[in-house]
Image (cartoon, rainbow, N blue to C red; front, top):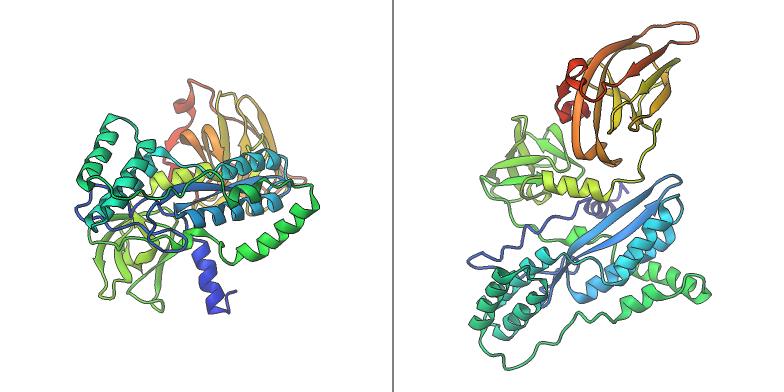
Length: 431
């Protein structure tokens, strides 16, 4: 893949996270018609949809969101693709059947269509077609938006567009009937031989056309002064515009940056990172807004199976020593052993009111840190609910025959600040 430029571009595009609705602005003075995220054509009746795909390993099941603004044809194809891959890959873990059934049901009913996002999409598209002198389409879109309106104020905005469009001379054919090819294909029984053969055929036929909807989503050009966030897993910050320029730093996905300049070609943007570093990145990898909310949604959607006490979440080296940690508090915790430079060598989970025993700890002096909270995300290594991080006294493991065994109790409720010091979350993590 790395040697083939075409396949490498395709792989890199598939690693891009779906952007938020940054291109949607129903209050813009001159809104541009929205295009389908997958085929790139302007759709007269777009919808913002989230499809689900489940991929299992032996011990965990990962739920992957496939989201975007779709025309009806591409929505059907994407639903079939997501359900097909879930049938093939979603069942092979303890939580796989439960999550696969939930994902298949969501795709079968046409995906999740959040009301707020779809109201904005339809209002934006109605105003865009009104500006392009297509009053019949604008009037129809305003009518369709009523289904997603949250209250009187939303309905009033749609009524204003409908009134400006006037009385339509023809009716727009509704494209979003619940019946269609996608429902038929997804509803076939798994046990039947005909379904199994059709499933294999659909994977072959649809795979090339539906690799990932995120690659084709339109991104508005970056502007000087805007706040944006990194949309791919690792983005290279370079000294000057150009792929051959030296790399200053690697930026994580969802890192929030500020655009300070745009190169003449428009393909490169000069940015400033949260740490104050300045450099250039391809502007197509910067999505509008701050990264905190998209990061939280991604972490929630990829939380993985709930960990259990004693589960090792990260290990970079091993040794002969053992550590026993008890957690008398009412909140689960993750304990990390860090070197003096801040790198984590070991991270493990301790449930509320439970004790974990972990071995294979190397020689050395280590900082001990821990975080507590609820709703842990394995993908991000953080608690999604009220996470707090603390530092504990350092521990030393010296060479000894058979290894040492140390015991540690996390601070009980009410004595946290007497025995532990508060710690920024990014210091608890490696990056």
